[in-house]
Structure formats: C-alpha cells, structure tokens
Image (cartoon, rainbow, N blue to C red; front, side):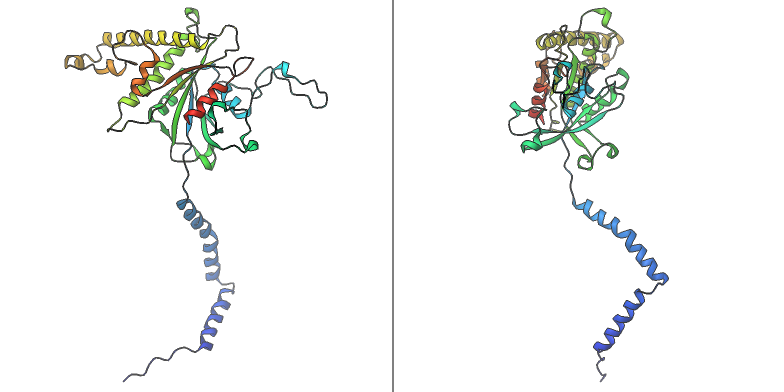
Length: 349
C-alpha cells in the first residue's frame, strides 16, 4: 500500500511565491518581453471588447439636391450657423454693434463634393419648430439628423442619384464624428432646391442651370430614380418611402415666381420632357421587341408618373408612395425665410 503524497507546507508555498515576485522584478529579458506585450496588447484588447459590445444608431438623413446656383449650400450654412445679417440689421449701439453683412456670414461657393452637417431638431411641436431655437439652452427634447449637400453640376449629379436609388450609403469616418459613423444611414427625405427667380420660359436662358428646362430635367431624373426604386423592389415588402420637398428659393427677389406658379410650371415642363423622352425611345427602337411580346418595355420604365397620361402632375407620384410638396421660402433677404422648410424636415425625420 502506497503512502499518500505529502502536501507542501505553507512556508514552502510562500517561498515559491516570494521567488516568483523577486524574479519578476529583476531586469531580465523575459520580464521586458512580457511587460512590453502587456503594455501594447492590452489597449487593443480593451478597445475590441468595448467596440464589440457598443452599438451605434444610424442617424436619419436628408439629402439636398438641385441645380447649381439654387442655394443648397447657403441653406446648409443657414441651418448650421443661424440666420444671415443684412445691412439694415446693423445695431446702432457703439459699444457692441452687430456686424454688417450684405452677404451670408459664411461665404458659399459651388460644391464639387458632397458635404454633410449634423443638426438637431425639436421633437415636441414640429409646427412651431425653428432652426433659430437653441435647443440646449431651452432644454427641449430633440433628435439629431444629417443634412447632406450634393453638387448640382450636371457632371456631378450621379452621386446624388445613386444615394436616392439605394437609400443607404456608407459614411467616410474621416469626415464625420464617431457618433454618426455607422455602416449605413437611412435616408428619410429629399429636398430639391430651385431658384424661383431663375425659372423662365425664355429660351435664351436655357443654358442656365437654374432655368426651367434645366431644373425640370434634373427633377425628372430625381423623381424617376425614386419611382424605379419603388417599382424594382424585390419581394413583397416595398422599400421605405422617401418624400420630396421642392423648395422654391429666393422668393425675396421681385422676379421670383410664387410657389403655386413654380409648381404648375414644373409640372408642365415635366410633362413635356416625359413626352420628348418617350418619343426618343420609340424613334430609337428601344423596347420594340417588348411591345411585340405584349409588354411596354423600357418606355414604361422611363415614363414618369401615371403611364399613358396626357398631363403630368405631382399627385401621380403618390401611386409609387412618393409624396411631393412645393413650399416657397428664402435663405437671405426679406422673404418668407426658411422656417417652413425646417418644419417640413421636422415632420419627416
């Protein structure tokens, strides 16, 4: 019969622990290697554990589209930095006079790349919401959203149209804060800014980006992109709707058309463009095989609104769950301002 293994005495265990501690305090190579690994690897391990267990919510986004010169960038600057000061708003107080500006506080220029700003909007009473409100000082409940300005030049509109088609897009972490860095952000609405003073039937202005024909052509592409997005959805679940606001800007100018006339002129021009493009497809023979087979082919897919209708109206877009509103306003001057546009955003986000 074997004898039981004797247990180590407490004194020997203490001696072993003491020797290990003394060895760890000695400036030997293994000690340096282990210490360096702990110092360099521990922060990465901690960051991995925290980022893995922390979820970041995607901010709702509103996309600004429209031709160059319509006032998109100025509108972003207005919502981000507050109203502009005109010369007659100059204070007569010699101690603390207001600065005198005939131009926006932040000078704008033609955008060549998309720009985004993070804004906060009230969630209590959207009918009284204003971009002038200091929500932090008022202690009012609010939510954040992204306002994205896109280039209006004809050669740079592809990025905006692709965002409308996908309704999700990746953000560049280098251009936004960590709180808004997510895999994708949901597009809640689109604002098409038009120059109400530049919409003219004069053919001499057709080369201007803010003319009626040029503006309506871009608007046609925007609405048709949203229409295709709604009709090409796979499965029984339709994609979330993206409402469109046509912001008739520069109503402070004497030559600007009122919002009702902007709407009727755009509808008439969109109907003309629809007919012209449909005739172009038929003349080129595109979709002929589909017509013979009993379908409408590319002609129907490129037809904006109710197929076969004689006149176009924005109400036809409701068939594709696309709500279109036309609201007048102004970024600068003594016009109606931009509060109605801000309240429209508050209802959508």
